[in-house]
Amino acid sequence: MEDIVVRKSNALVEASYKLTAQEQWIILFLTSMIKNHDEDFKDYSLSIKDFSELAGVRHKGEYKEVEEVTKKLVGRVFTINEPSGPLQISLLSSAKYLIGKGTVTLRFDPNLKPYLLQLKDRFTKYNLHQVMQMKSSFSIRIYELLKQYQNLKERSFLIKELREKLGIGPEEYPKYGNFKQKVLNVAQKEVEEKTDISFEYEEIKVGRCVGKIRFFIKTQARTKKTLPFPDAIAISKIGEQAQVSESSELLRLMELIPQEFRKESIKELIRLAFEKNGFDYVVRNIEFANDGSNAVNPGASIGKGSNYRNYLA
Image (cartoon, rainbow, N blue to C red; front, side, top):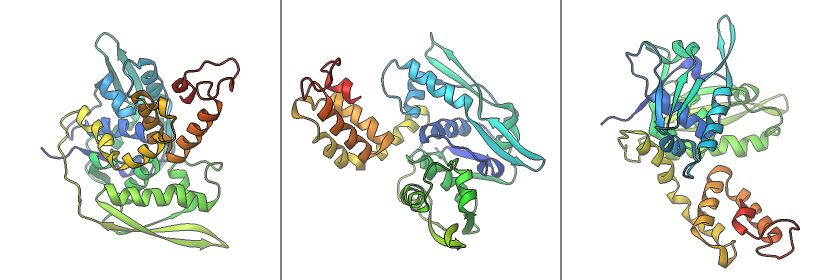
């Protein structure tokens, strides 16, 4: 079976927006369900279980949390720069739950038809499984933006322009050094390790500061075996496969937990937080829980119980 493919018009690739990695996984998975001959969008249904895995929600029966994910997705607005002027649009127009069947049905906004249906030219195509392995939302977006220019082997952005396309506001990574460390370098590592391209970049000064980035794009052999994914469950497992290499960091985090609380429920809680927020974030919260939890230090938190897991969560 061939790899599942995502096709997006270049105008949509160039749009300005910010989604979490999990939200992008959902949208890209739905995009991959569109067939070349489709003349209109369909209702794309997923079981709550499959949707939960795609969204990073791994607790059974978490309908409420899944509803929050779809509510945010339906409310996400992004901007496509059309020739006649900017178009502000939502990716999804609706999310319908069928509780008895345990499914959620999603529908794209009709205004997206020219950007996703029956694309003949000026579109970017790539394999879904590659982006499903990346955990940084910025890595996914930078991959798309560079994949579009793969044959040209080079692409340049003003820092301001790139930040806008990635949906990074002025208050987020305001200094170039932070932007380089948290966005560019993370994307460079993930794209090289998990996709069919890699890149180097050159910093170009505008005035006295770095104001422009020139990317040098290389095509690389896909070292990982290309796997067929017949359904949503198989695709959602990619994220779990990609996390195997992180087991050593998870073990280091578990060593910070008091011995009596090193249970599977705690391990799962830490794993989810680690995937979402990273190593340093989890370390800080474990240290905070160890200092402030009544379970570890009786009387540390007046008026709160002594359940260590609840406090850590």
